[in-house]
Image (cartoon, rainbow, N blue to C red):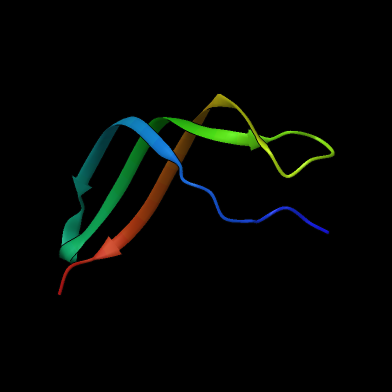
Length: 68
């Protein structure tokens, strides 16, 4: 029998973004977010919760847009 797939997660994050306006209403967008997620892992082989774990992630984003 599988353990439940739902869990409660908390996170802390920080981000930096930059937008550059281009001619004709276009723009370039760049962003980087750094986040740390805190969650409880299940103990292997049992349905019990284990210790709280922290995982770090970096999320880059780039885009091109048009304002109307």
